[in-house]
Length: 429
Image 1 (cartoon, one colour):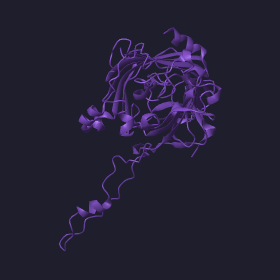
Image 2: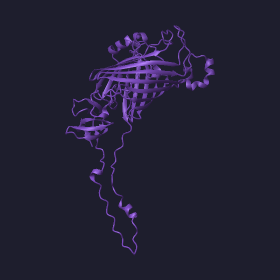
Image 3: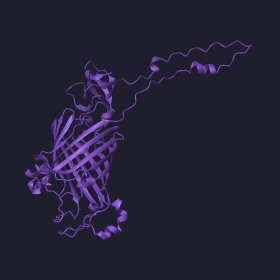
Image 4: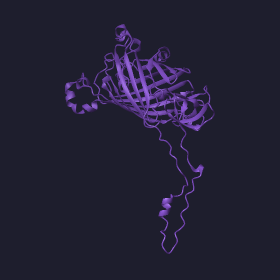
């Protein structure tokens, strides 16, 4: 554990994010304007720290597209060094992902990894949220990911007994699937420190029956592990992040035949306007949990750390429908009234024409929402001041509802169930 804390504060790491919409979160946990802002947000700035998932989710109706790239080992003792341009000539893993927000707290995802040709499906559900009044002390989410590998049969069963493979050929499809489930327990301590703990269970339908020469333990189908991640805010625009996993496995303990080292990652986070930049390193080979939790053969002390980057972009696929004008207390139309009037005969005079319906009182008409369009990236703030606490950033082109035109410079708006103030000069009809 000493390595974890020393590395977290001494090693700069890289991972690039270019997203505006993903930063729709509070910059601090200052008291909210109204009760709807009671929940704590911006505990972390992204769906992941480096390797580890957070309890953050994509917004409702939004699609997050991610490109995660991890280069080779940097240190010469781990096949890195100058002849591989310190890992830049090699690629450990590449992961392309799509995550869609069904609701504000529920997302589904799909992805594809270079490592083992993994095809992934995932789901994350945040069912508890930490509140500012501390009545709910934690944000809690569950996360699950399943990976299917379409690699060739020769690769899949490499090293296995051919007789066993023939006898179990009927189970080949299930042998290609690995599952990981996590409980994400997240808390923000004040404005600067955020922590997440993740009890984790991984199941692999097929593993090679390898033996650890140190203790004669056989590789397990089921792995229990626990992850921990932190975000420490140093200045308003800079933070240090780190995540670490301890995997409980006798087979992986001091295994000289197949070495295993706990996955560790550290990161320097820089915020500039509507973007977040991460600089990170990790000894993990794979990018998804089904890859790096069972397989992590590289050591930090032997130069087995890798440089990588992530690029994410959020797209708004669906939005709220526009409000319609509704009339209350309006009489039936004259056509309907006439249809119910008796037809005149020669023995009775025609009834007087039905009076025209009176216009609906002005106060009985529900007005349409006063919608405006952002002509640039907007900063929604807690109060009508450029120095007030930042609530969220709103991407260019987004439609917002103007609740109150507070003054000539600042208007109160509502966007994605959040309320705050923006500069009026950046809103157009």
